[in-house]
Amino acid sequence: MSVSPADRQPGAILSKLCLGVASDAVLTDVRIGPFVTAVRTTVGTGIATTMLDPQIRGRHPMAVMAGRYQRMPVVEVVQRSRQGSTLERSVAVASIHGSIRNRLPVARSVNGFDILVQLGHHKRVVFIGHFPFVDSDRVEGFASLDVFELPERARPGDHLAEDLPKLLGRADLVAITGTTLVNNTLEEILSHCSGGSLRLMLGLTTPLSPILFECGLDILCGVMVEQPDRLLIEAAEGATHKQIGGLRKVMCVRPGLDVAG
Image (cartoon, rainbow, N blue to C red):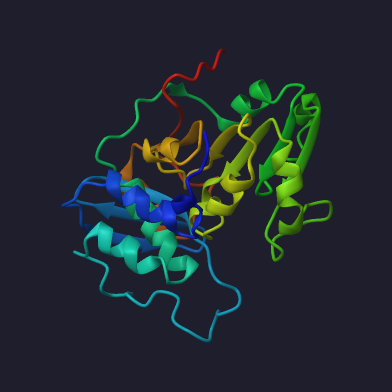
């Protein structure tokens, strides 16, 4: 599926996701932990990775609306975040995650890495984000594996932005971290993917919204919040991704796409 020019502007997909949010959804509780942000709305509870802007840390407010989030409409939170900090977009994505009007049907409960191993066998695979399973023996079945990461997070061997067009253009499968919605890089990434590639979004930040299929993604591997009270407490108390409980890992597939296995 091609990506429309309108969807190539940074933050455009985040705004488009508002179309799938309940129009009357408002925030009722916000917990910004060092690793995970959790938001309760009048519709449900959502989650996202907490991300900070290293270049403004300590010099400017990272959450301009701190103390005023409660009772703010989700759509307003998202629109304000487009020109805001990555921390504010962490809140925005978590708000979307917890306010989707027509949530996608779950194909099955599954670990996203298991799907990657299955679909990436003998394929040229690109990871957008240094996933924790990059060094697993199970990726040896890929024909090739290239990893992209932001400069401040890159590890030896990771590619940077200048290599994106060439490697994404020839990839068979592209695995994209959900945090690309937070750091405003998803639009550029999708614009460089070849028309024949399979595109997955993974991680707890991934909103299970059908609008992401319209924007060029094929498979969403995210989480459903099954114990919201537990999530809110653990996020506020500094739990890491691995420590957070009360979540169910699920996969949603674009209609018409057959994922065997």
